[in-house]
Image 1 (tube, rainbow, N blue to C red):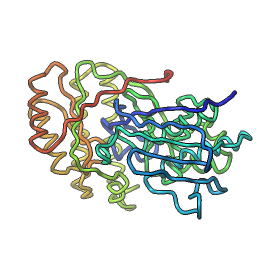
Image 2: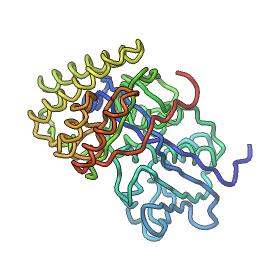
Image 3: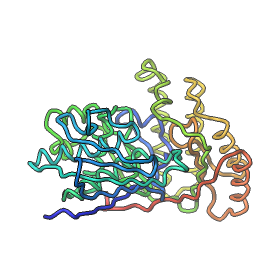
Length: 369
């Protein structure tokens, strides 16, 4: 099969509904939703270096060459720029799959466009996960490789995990499958070990310990609203404040048990169309995050996120930070027909310096699961 000369693929961003922090532990659960803002990656042939990458977020291009250790700087092997680390990891993963199939990776030129940023500042909608998924999809398609949904997810997670096993992969799953999903995180260390022992091709076909995913129906009568605090946050930085003593402790087990109970109840509520129960579980998730914040001093609830929740709850919405907190976005679920309350909530957000984002749920894509 002849590979096309130009390929464009895009992947949506994500929001956590319930299950943050707990889902970082393998086998634990979260509910996520994909949003209709995307990262787009266009791949075409390169007449020069092995890989040339350009992005609308930074001026100029980055020129790379392939080496035994993966992609490095063209001229003297200088490190890959930090802002492109997820893109380069995704290319390396597809390159590895090609090599195992006896195929040579062609020279590539990538152009990246993000709607998950505002004037260069990330919105907290999972831009790193989305660009990883979009890069895997576009590079694989350009090279003539068929990548079904689960293969895309697995390649993207391998690429992410090679930089560190802290990320749950929930953002990748939302970017791949779209819509509302229930997700349990795989054991990333075990998956990396598997890849080292049996290779990428076999690993993406093998069972992954802890991993589970299924699609969920949307709420019947609730609309998802999103507010941005204007303050970017780092999940790795916030999670790192928990410290090694917390992971594996009684406090951590208590938190994950309570979170799993909340997530399971939220999944049942979605599947049974019980909007009131779903709203209750979103509030329970907010309380869990608040308790964790008080215990560990993470700084999850910034003044902006606290104001977002207060303004939403004042009109009857169920609200919470989405993701690690510390800035970025919060969500609110409100009766779809409550126009007056919606206006009051958004006015309250604006008055508190929180920007209502014009985003909606990205419908589920691809095959069923």
